[in-house]
Image (cartoon, rainbow, N blue to C red; front, side, top):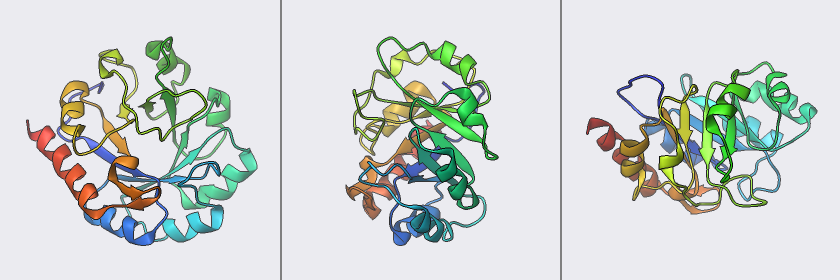
Length: 212
């Protein structure tokens, strides 16, 4: 849950592969755009694609690169085209801190996870992204988890992910009061291809939840 009161839930759309989808997300006022650099993802982009896509992102919209236990050399190649790093694997705090950009740590909600401990462990992170757990899958499952497992007054800002869509995002915002929400599959027509109506509906439902 958010560490301090706020009037607006930030929004991150993830898994961009097309320039026109970036343009629409920016027009809708989305705060952050995510690019998946992990090659095993159906939404992955390489360094050259990242460079071209990130060039379409204007000032004051955060470009986030998603990595899963990948070589430091590759991450370094991506840094010029990003504003923030998202580590979605088993990276240690030391491994996350070695780069020049701010970062967040994604945590999959295993049954035994202790979020208070993880917030202390990753205390240099800008936020913790909480996602559903499926063995062998680091993210993008399209599944939700029990939001009541998120402790109140967690030491780090929470970015809520996992199975979000226009159908459930209002309930998620009201129940969790996260700093931000992260969506990929819930705004797509197919992997990596966003749906304009779903994107607009998601943004609209977040705004409605914030006013209530």
